Length: 148
Image (cartoon, rainbow, N blue to C red; front, side):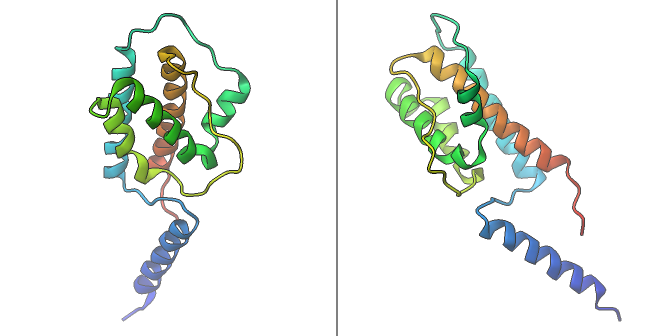
């Protein structure tokens, strides 16, 4: 009997443990689809918000929203705004809380995104960009095939 299959399993377990040790959450295709659907629900709710004017992001804001090490701090900013402006029971607030486990735990010394107070348009545009980055990250993990 060959011990090769056991070695492959041990290598896979070691790789998963290394990812978790680096602060990278491990997700399966099923959980990835779940989180992508949560993100889509948030985007659908954002589209329903009464926004007075169109808001545009500058390159620095886009970079901050895309940066992996700022994902948790940025989420905290979005959660604070959503709770204060939309309420604890809003679908956006609830779903933002749900996506916390998939965010990397690594932190940055850089400041998180700033959301203009009482500006739903600013919140909407920045949150959509942020969610797009997370969705793209999840989708890229879903299309990668394991090397083991």
